[in-house]
Length: 118
Image (cartoon, rainbow, N blue to C red; front, side):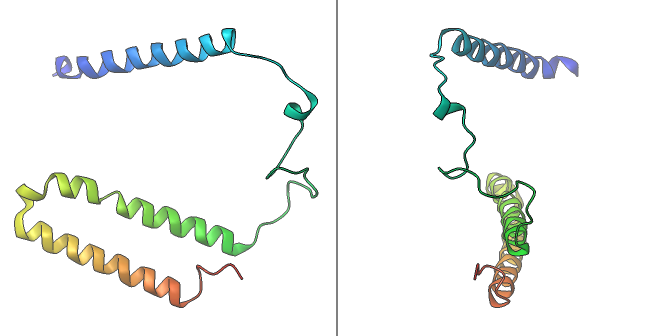
């Protein structure tokens, strides 16, 4: 049983070694010329003008949560597409129902104005 996981372990070890080696080589041989402009704090290309602990509008969080929800739901399409042959008509109907639910949710959110910034 454990022998089946050996290629995965080898892959993880090799990828970790390559990642650490690339970061180390870049740090040792890469250009390091800090200046006042490079070390200054910035946000969107200009100096910060408010405290970093200011509250954001609730709509920002709502759009972020909606993006995460829809993004995670869309992630179900890849395994479904890979297993579509074995799922048959039932899998197709189930995914159709899933997509209809997504579209209804999107329309409800859109109609309530949750995607509008102003």
